[in-house]
Length: 170
Image (cartoon, rainbow, N blue to C red; front, side, top):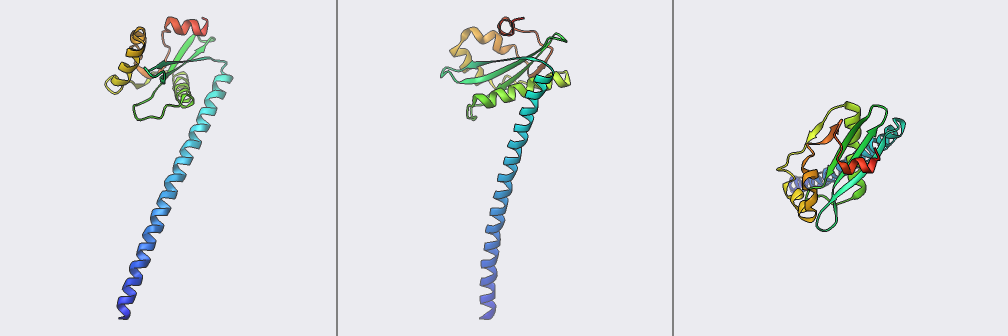
């Protein structure tokens, strides 16, 4: 009878330890997410400092879907000293919560990456965003040509569209 009691006690202790492990794991995941968000905030702040220190001109614009939501955010940086433009693009997936500030931060980050590393990066796979592009083009048929010209989410030394030139006033 004593051994049965001990066995039950061990089972109860094991179950309690499993609950503790779950709580600790959940807490660790929560802390990891908080650290990632903090790291992103620091990165985005450094991007703004980089743009300011390099005296880069910056514009943002959006491609919107039929519900007028900013699905694609574009950031263009113009370095007047080197006469170079870099473009960063942020694309919301169908599962994303649309947040204009986040779109701007990611697009700006990709434009800064292009300026710093001096090459194109993060290829846009048209099949991945086909439905997103179609929803935007349905709402704005005149944008089809401009939207499909982008090859990467981070582009260095780009040829500006007429719209971008007018926004940058160059």
